[in-house]
Image (cartoon, rainbow over all chains, first blue to last red; front, side, top):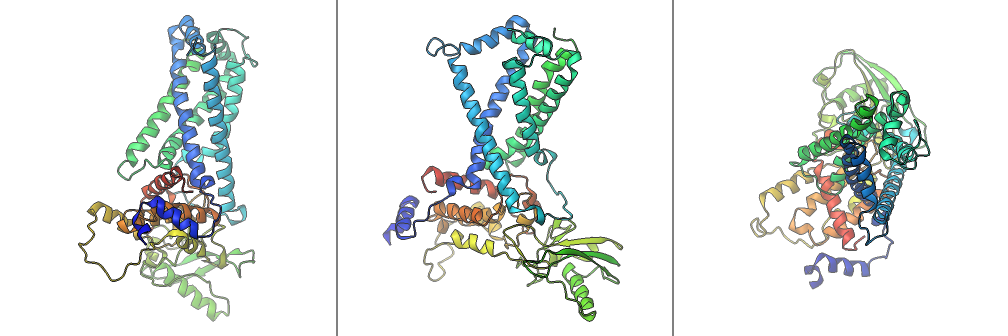
Length: 248
Length: 248
């Protein structure tokens, strides 16, 4: 009986040794999946903020923008090989994206199983559900498609509206000229979808990681709205400025 | 007042089920929603039809038996239990849609009655303390800070009605499980099993095919007992703590 007075951990160990050894699934539970989604999402949000900051350098002119892009390849050099840091960073981002998508798809499948198509309500009213939470899944798909296009366009430059270039600044300026309005439109739509995704995602991630308390709830929601707004506006400014001829 | 009711009728677990429309005249606005269903059932019985099966017990808002979805909201337009909802919340001439809770974990037994045994099994998995309590101790023998006692008590008011699952877009039972985890986690008697409790309850919840939480908040918005949404964050924190200690 004295075991019970010891720490939680020992109590657990003793209890397990006497009970059936059932293989536990808590590491693959919905909560664990959500946490993986929140943690990978946090990495992606931090990256987005850094990316947005870099984009705004376009207003400092071609030399500053291209110089900034080049400097990213030299981080850690000569300790790391050239572009070494960049590739480590890219692998971390890719891993985060894959974890994020895997968790999303798995949880989506579980939610569908929890209320199958033939058990839907005939009448369902939204009480507090926001538009941003409503669009999390399809918005996420749109963002994923955009990211693929975006990398092919501005990173790899395989898709090159307005002509290829070795200068990131020129790729940006060429790609968002008024005659390529559809490229700009897709960009704008994807960034707005991203804004909605972050509005619910940042709040939901913080709640999942256990930060939410009743009196903090308004603060967390304000943080989510703030990050969503800053990222949306910050990403919209450069291409729109190019389209309207403010950057050339 | 005169109303038109659209009620889900289903003969048994394997029956497909369908919505059936009934007209009721001279309904008093002082009737509770269940009394209105009683009137309907008297009428159906006199007409030699099968009365509508619905769960009910205390009819004073504390047992949690009488959950149905009314016009797309769990327990109807007021934040209370169905038995405490009165016909004055509706207008003369309204068409009211009544459906059972919809979740794979809550199979329909008949008409509006669902089997909520999944909740019992989540409680059996860990929603208790194993300490032999003996006779009631002196009230001041084990001082508990007032805010902790209040929070434990608020969480303990959960009546297990299942409205959280019914309202959740993912059919998740997180608010229910979180209420019990929070209730016991705030009190000294709940500490020895705190780390293992949350793991066992979440595993059982997943086992029952409830969905995952996406922090939308529909559950807390319809909860007749006002279980706060932040209990879910407390559960997440406890589970992540357990997993990081290797209890999974």
